[in-house]
Length: 351
Ligand SMILES: Nc1nc2c(ncn2[C@@H]2O[C@H](COP(=O)(O)OP(=O)(O)OP(=O)(O)O)[C@@H](O)[C@H]2O)c(=O)[nH]1
Ligand SMILES: [Zn+2]
Image (cartoon, rainbow, N blue to C red):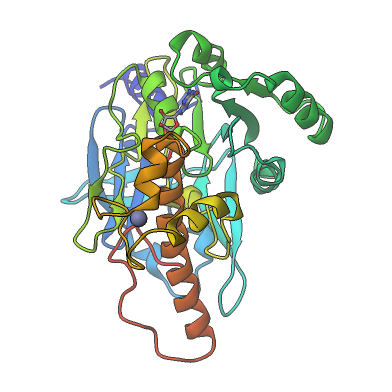
């Protein structure tokens, strides 16, 4: 394979340069990190790899280890080994709270952080600011996306409020995530060589927008969700999506963990809590039980099905995060860690 061919392949997974490091044809991008190793993509296929021994040395700054988004040089083998991490053009990180504070890399070589918020009940300038602060000094550019433009009459007023609140020059796009024509203006951030991550709270419309960008129904949206053996929701996802516009979207658990912290009250849904207290059975599952006030409200239109579904999603997410938080606090207090909280959902446990 020639250098030009290799560059073209790598371009589809976010390579920006016009040349490769001298003599290096065996390059790939890290798209996921598991306990057992790394998942890489070279523009053609996904494959597994192990870090070379020098990455495992004790005392090595974790920031020097391969991370999601890195371009790496490979040594042949079965599986291949990651020999070297190429210089990064951006680094998204956060302080990981634990026994000691540590910088934790979420993703590297990201050009745009697409911060998605719905123009519905999800609209919350404070949360947008939380995401924007995450991108400060990262080298990646934040882009604020407001979805559900089609269901909001006073979108202009909300936009004006937001513009006056956010730093001048922050790009803001109001879109209907279901409409390809409306989403087309985002292609400027998704050209060949571009890498973007999409962040936003549950129900904001990430899967919907991703599907529209892909032009397919590839991600599970809304109700099409599997339950794992513990009855929790699991979303099947791909860590790197190559888009028809030439850019790529990277989905990493690190970004998804910036959702709820587990400490929220979900005050937004206080009315639903009140409804549920009127069910005949105290332990009503709000399914087919007789005397269910929630079902009654859904039937008579007092409660919209979409809002109910979003409430369930957020509640699940909050419960899960709360359990993780509690386990961490228990460890900090020196107690024994409880048995594995939630299998391997989300990839890694917090340190
Ligand atoms: N009208 C309208 N509905 C939208 C839009 N974007 C998303 N939705 C709806 O909002 C709901 C949630 O959308 P999802 O795409 O599942 O949200 P998500 O951010 O992927 O949620 P999680 O998978 O829980 O993180 C679905 O019912 C979508 O159909 C939009 O621009 N307009
Ligand atoms: Zn009920």
